[in-house]
Length: 208
Image (tube, rainbow, N blue to C red; front, side):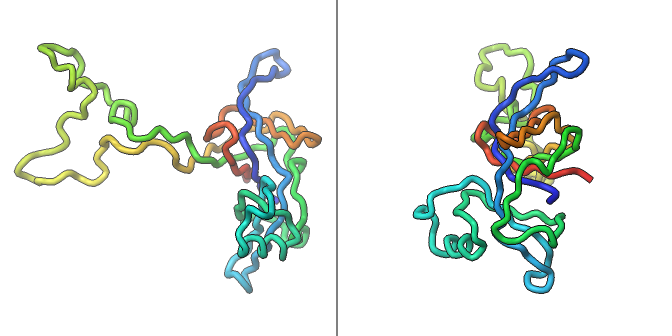
């Protein structure tokens, strides 16, 4: 397997061989279960489908329940596909654990960023505001200002940086180094930060 599913537990720091504190993120990676093997002949492409985070069978609808039962897997909360894998070594129902990673591996982590709701241009796009405030212009400090011409072109160009919903988008952070693997606790410790809130689901994929 080239990757695994997990859950972000939070951040901490560990000391390297030089005594320097290194910020890192602790991820509960696996155990995952193979819920389907897709082939080019039947599905049009090769992929392995993994499920993570067991849930009660009574909480799964009938189509998904049948899908998990056919694979011989428990009911899972989160299911994702991975393209790069060795198909001969995996079968439906097989368990994928965190020990497929090793210290020093370089990985990319994908997750949903924290949602910030509807935000203005200062927070969303780092606008500077109007600068000095004089003559009671208290309501214009964080305003976007002019957004275009008047008579021509008489419209707002697409892509104009304006207020709107911020966050809650898929974000991938690449080239993160695996600092430590704890197989007995299903923990993966990577250098730096990863997207998402605590207990948010993430995909970890080995680079290269």
